[in-house]
Length: 185
Image 1 (cartoon, rainbow, N blue to C red):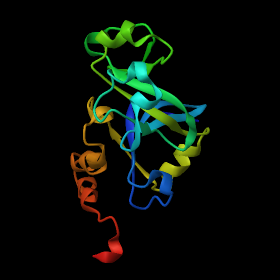
Image 2 (cartoon, rainbow, N blue to C red):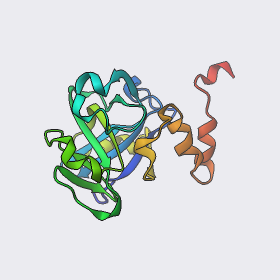
Image 3 (cartoon, one colour):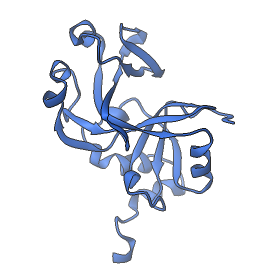
């Protein structure tokens, strides 16, 4: 049973996480309840331009304007998140946390473009069944930290893992200096 929802928070892979799908990744949690957990990896840009797969949305997405690898599940499907400043709730947008929400990609972009501050498209997602994430948290695979509004849309996703850790307090900030391969130290 999930006691506290982690929706809207970040999962930051610990150096001990051995799964290559999540090595040094940062996951923004879209849903977390007794039925399981759903999130998207926000620091893995792919080489695919949004213009190659979702032409109507290509002028709205934040830089870099590529599709991000949201996770290992359903890589052939797309989902998008967008920020909506000022508390509005535009057509085809469902609030997840604060000013961030999921975008219905079937809505014509011209109807919502003016309402979006930032937007990003993801291929696939990361998912955990009931209790699965809690087991991984107990085993030390993830750090759970607060998200900041710009995390999901950073123009430098390759630096996000270190940046998120660096802004934490205490020993957790030190993890940001952990080398890619500790055997080479």
